[in-house]
Length: 600
Image (cartoon, rainbow, N blue to C red):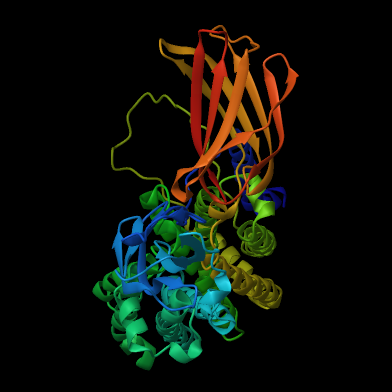
C-alpha cells in the first residue's frame, strides 16, 4: 500500500518540483524576448508635427508580421482614406504610400496586422502636417476590436479540434498498444470516427473564422472570398489545409475498421502512425510556438505535449467507453489496464515536462502569472491539471491494488563462485506447479478487479470530465496573447560609464515597473573599484526614437552617496525607450551610458 500511495503522489510531486524550479529561475533571470509581435516604432512618430506631407507611413514591429486579412490605412480629418490602398510588408516593417495631392491637415493611421502566432495586433496614432489639431481615433468610424461572436466561436472550434485529435489518435493508439481485442469494439469505432469528424469540423471552422478574426469583421464575412484567400495564403491556413488532408487520409486508412471492424494490418498501423504524427504536428506547430525565441525547441515541446495529451485522454475515453464495460472478459480488461497504466504514466511525465517548458517560454516571469490574463488562465489550467493528476493517482492505485502490480526495483547484484562452469545454454525453468499457481493468481486478481470495475469507471469518468475542462482552457489560451508579450518587466541593469579615454566606472539603473505612466527610478554610481561615488553633476533622459518623443529630462533627488531617485518618472506611452545617463565627475571628466528597454 505504501508503494502504491507513493506512485499516486509522484506525478504531482514532480510537477510541483518543476514549478518551484521555474519560479526560482524566473526570479533570477527573466528574458526580454516576447512570443508576440509588438509595435516598436512608427514613421512619422505618434503626435509628430511635420512641415510637409511624407511620401509613406511605416510601422516597425518587434518580429515579422503580415497584413493578410488585416490593413494599414491613413485617414484625413474628414475620415477619408488618403493612402494608395496597398500595404507593403518587409519582414518587420509594414508601410503604405500616401497620395501626392495632400496638404496641411491632421492624419490618422489605423492598422491591424497579423503576428507570426496568428494573433492580430491593432492600434492607431495620428500626426499633423502644419499647425492643425491631432485627429481623434473616432474619425475611423469603426472599432478595431474582434467581433464578440467571432471571439466566442474560435475557442469552440479549437476545442473541437483538440478533443477530436484525442479521440482520432488516442483511441486507435490505445487499442494497438494496450488492447488488441478492442479492434472488434463498435463503441471504439464510433469514438474514433467521431474524433475524425471533430478534427475536420474544428479545422474547417478555424479556417473560416480566421479571416473575420484577422480583419475585425463579423460572422457574416466567413465566406468572403478575399478573406478566404488571405487565410489560405497564411502559415496558419496552410497548416489547417494540411491537417484536413491528413485527417482524410487517416479516415480512408481506418475505413475498413470503422465500417466492418477489420483490424489494420501491420503496414497499415505504421502508415496510420505517420498520419497521426502529422496531425499532431500540424496542431502543435501553429500559434505561440512558431513565434518568439527558440521556435524549434518550442515546436518540439508543443508536439510532445499534444501527442501525450492525445494518448492519455484518448486512452481514458477508450477505457470509459469500452474496456470497463460489463461485457468485457476479466482477463482482457486486466491486461489492457496494466498496459495502459504504464503508457499513461509515461504520457503524464511528458505532459508535465513539456508543459513547464512552454510555460516558462510564454510567461517569462512568475509575476506575469498574476498580472496578465494569460497567466491567470494558465493558473486555472494548472489547478484543473492538479485535480486531474489526483484522480489519475486514484485510478493508478486501484489498478495496482486490484491487479497486484508493483513497481519493480532493481535487484542487488550478487556474484557466486562455482567450482565447475555450467553449460552456456542452460536456463532455469520454473516448475509447472509454480507456473500454474501464478496463472491462477492472475486469473483470481482479474476476476476480482472485474467485479469492482464500477469504482474505477467512476474515477476514470472524473478524469475524462477534468480532461474536457483542460482542453477548453487550452483552446482559450491558444487565442490569448502570451504573458511575456503583455507584462511589464522592470529594468535592472548595470552599465559601464564611457568617457573619451574609455570605460571609467559604472552605473546601476533600476526602473520599476517600466510601464506607461508613473515609474520609480534608482540610479547608483560606482567608480572603477566598485565604490559608490558622488558626481559633480548627473542627468538622465528618456527618448523614444521611433515615435520621435524626447529627450525627456528626469528629475532626480539625492538619496545618499552616489544614489539618486526619480520618484514618479513619467513614461508617456508604450514603445522601445532609451534611458541615457550623463555624469560629470569633475570639471574635466564626463561619462555617459545608455540602455534600451521595452515598455508595454
